[in-house]
Length: 92
Image (cartoon, rainbow, N blue to C red):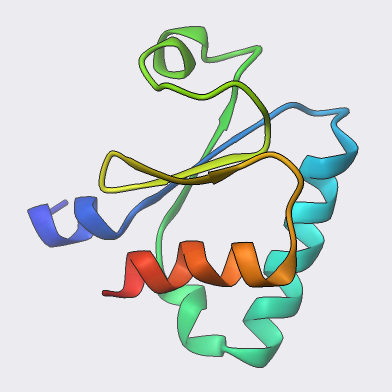
């Protein structure tokens, strides 16, 4: 993977039973319908229960949490606007 692709990758930290994480997934699906160009942005889903090393290497307190290029874009209760901001950051 080239450096530009790494900069565009979205890290999505989540927990399997988290209702806010489920909502984030629903909002991403809605975003992809409205903005199909965002489907090409790579997303690395990190289940913090299974991948504790990578989770511990990032500074966040709540799930879902989204990082782009090592920078936290948002964490906590998702909204369509917040999810769109994540993909806009990755598309820049």
